[in-house]
Image 1 (tube, one colour):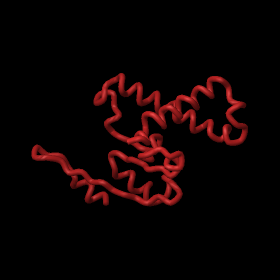
Image 2 (cartoon, one colour; image 1 turned 180 degrees about the vertical axis):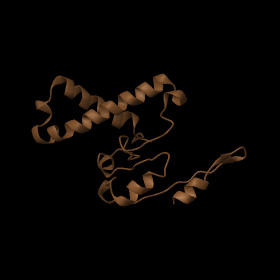
Image 3 (cartoon, one colour; image 1 turned 90 degrees about the horizontal axis):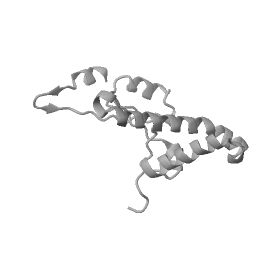
Length: 133
């Protein structure tokens, strides 16, 4: 695969794009197939069973997906800062999920409840297609 990807290039006449599909048992990004393949890819879009179970489509896992164009020199400082802020909120929400599962929402601080609310708003309003389309 590495040899094939090394031959993919952009010229004045156009670009070649390669799309790889990899089966990941139980969404395990550390399994040999995805771990080896990701090393050869510029960008990754990870579809997540956990996101699909929430009824959010497309079921893209924003914390596991990567892109080289998420760079302030390419997308601009404002867009980059917003993307980093969204990622931070989603990461904080992910770390709170175990606490919520054991103790419930009532045991969270007001700040943590706000993080949960913002994360749900981001996931349901901005990272998914409308269910009414």
